[in-house]
Amino acid sequence: MVNEIHSHQKTKPKPLAPKKRIKTRVPKEANLDENEVLVGSYVMKLNDKYICDVKNHKYCFIKDDRHLSLNNFAISLWAKEIVCIFIITSILC
Image 1 (cartoon, one colour):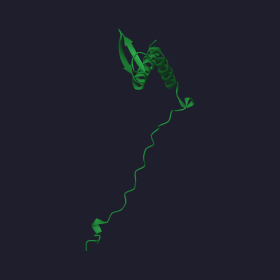
Image 2 (cartoon, helix red, strand yellow):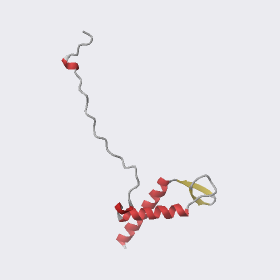
Image 3 (tube, helix red, strand yellow):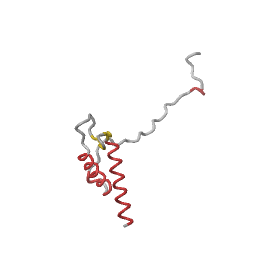
């Protein structure tokens, strides 16, 4: 009686929901739009300008001998903000 399966206890395997594919690779330059290319160019310029050799940080914003560590996320946000300001001023002018 322990091994019996009652009609209300029947179990069917649940179908697995399709997983969303997460893009983990770098997009090809040919597939980028004009704004994304502009953001990328500013990221490279900021990376070149704010290299830090004094601290253990890779990139720093230095003001009055104080080092503010910059990670890739902060630099990309900064570059996006520069592009947004550039676009807004070009539309308004």
